[in-house]
Length: 259
Ligand SMILES: Nc1ncnc2c1ncn2[C@@H]1O[C@H](COP(=O)(O)OP(=O)(O)OP(=O)(O)O)[C@@H](O)[C@H]1O
Image 1 (cartoon, rainbow, N blue to C red):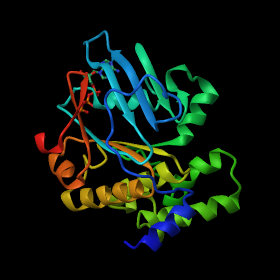
Image 2: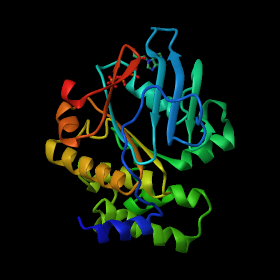
Image 3: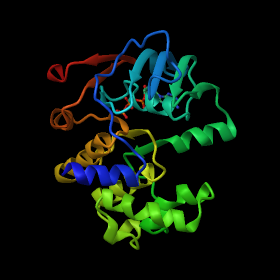
Image 4: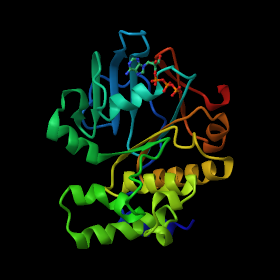
C-alpha cells in the first residue's frame, strides 16, 4: 500500500497517523484523562457467582497503539472488553477512554462514548434483514447525520474493507469473512479513535482471519488505537504487535516471543 493511498484514506476517514510506542501496564499517576487513548487504573470486576472476572488491571494505550490480549478460556478477556465499552461496571478502579471515566457514565453520556469507540464481535452481530449499507450506516443515521453525509462516509468505509461491491447484499448472502468485514466497517464508520475487537477471527478460516488482521493493521496504520483479544497464537505471531496476557483475571504485558 502506498503512502499516498494511506494519506487519502486518512483524510476521508478523518484520521491521522501517530508514532508507535509500546503500551504500558503501569500508567503514570498523572495524565489519566488526556494522554492516553485508553487508561485502566486498578480495575477489578469479579463476578460473585464464580469469582471469575478481572483483578487489579493497569493498562495504558496511546493513540496509535496496537495490542493483542490473549489468555486461556475464562481468564477475563471479554470482561475486560465489556468494561472498556461500558457494558460492565468495575467494582474498583478507573477506566478512561477519550478523556471520559467510563465507569461514571450513564444513559446519554454512555451512548456518546460508544460512538467514539468501535467494537467488533466474534459473531458479527449484523441485522439479517438489513443490507450491508443499512447495517453500516445505521450508526450514523441514529446520530441524525444527513443522508448526504452518510453517503459520503459509506463508500470510503466499504472500500477500506473491500466491500464496495456488496453494499446491496444481505448478511446471509456473504461469507463469514465478508460478514466480519461488514462489522468492522460498522465499527469504524463513525471515525472512532479506539477499536476493540473481541475474538474477531474466532469463526474464520486462516485466509479470512489473515484478511481481517490485515484490515485491523491497516486501520492502526491510519492512527486508530486497536485492541484485539484472541486465542490464536498464529494471529499474534503474524500480527507482530505487543501482547498482554490475562491469567485468572490478572493482566501482564509480555514479549510476543514468550507466547
Ligand atoms: N455475567 C457473568 N456472570 C457471572 N460470571 C461471569 C459473567 N461473565 C463472565 N463470567 C465469568 O468470568 C470469567 C471470565 O469470563 P470472560 O468471558 O471474560 O473470559 P474469556 O477470557 O473472554 O473467555 P473465552 O476465551 O472463553 O471467551 C469466567 O469464569 C466466566 O464464567
